[in-house]
Picture 1 (cartoon, each protein chain N blue to C red):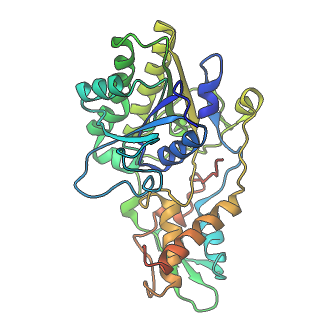
Picture 2 (picture 1 turned 60 degrees about the horizontal axis):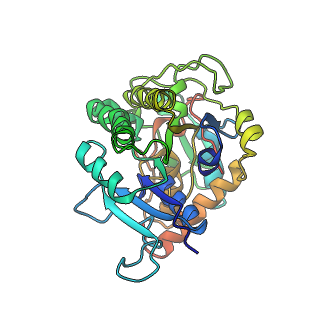
Length: 113
Length: 241
């Protein structure tokens, strides 16, 4: 954002990683952070994610969170920002999830959540 | 050291992006004015570590009440803070909520941007102010091509995205009409530990912490959105910066 504002000429830029990931991947990596493997069972609204070892249900689907309309495959091409601003993302998908999970685990320990 | 020539006004300063931007600009020596909506409960958790009592000396971070639905309020905050750079990060940014509050979302996310731009124009500050508008990948909606670039046509799919489409174009309109240094950053998903608790990524990592600490014995249904695990290949997460 700051780099965009510092340019001699105003312009519009896409900021993205050029990668796409599913929420499913996010769930798997987040639970991996605490040593749990998520196994998926069932279909559609009945699909559930279980802990491979204990069989505990870790994730479920709730139709209340469906949107009336959903967006298509969003995948940004950051070429312009890379060429004109020298900007590129620095945090990988896995590192991001690790950081977020550890921050929430830490907050729990300190009774902040 | 403070550089008096660099003064930023950040709307949405208490949000994920606003707080990170405030921290970055303070490190760069800016005076930073953060705008936040009034609330009867504390909502400054992300900027508390930056805040110091304004009665102390050398303070460079200030908070102001500002609501983009209130035109005279926007004008006064703009006039009082005299920023050289305005970063508009304020929005009702929750897509699902925008279906429930479409008019409010349009007012804040669409007309709110116009109010900020008009404040710059009316105060005759177009030549000494730079403007950043937080645009969004939601503008692409029913994506017309993959991957999306700055030239991909927009097809918004929610009241949020439609309001942001107005914001995108009114920003360009003020750039082309009045020569304002105004730019759009079209950001795809950007997540982090301070992401709002109602967004799916943060719901998942909070759920991991809750389950691991035995607070939730079994399922975390309703904590996760359907896209958390459903076959919604279309939903994706992306790291930024």
